[in-house]
Length: 136
Image 1 (tube, rainbow, N blue to C red):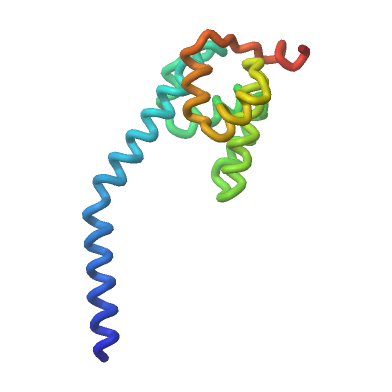
Image 2 (spheres, rainbow, N blue to C red):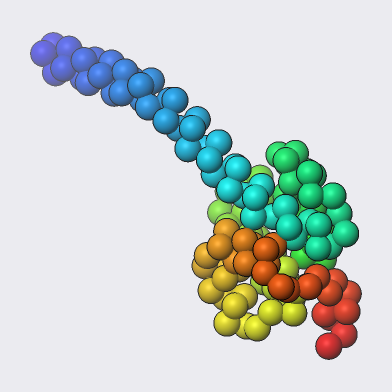
């Protein structure tokens, strides 16, 4: 009986803590979203697309997948747990190919530290080559 009361008190306490952390979680998610938007805005413009499309939540993933050279339907892979991680790496690798980046930059800048790599591609002197990158 006492164990049940302590367990109930623990559950209520944990629920209260999770409720108090909700604003911080929303704020953190908003910051992450804004960083992603800022990191892909320049890439969109370099590829000839409008930069403001980075603001539209799921559509921006669609455009990143299209930049990598995949069909838009492949965006669905971002909604499958664990597959989305591997697919994100593959997309990063192919975006590096579209910008004609070295293997080292693709691994470290676009797979391991993707957000930083997107900032470098967006605001650096790199040019989007698209189909031309596949020929070279």
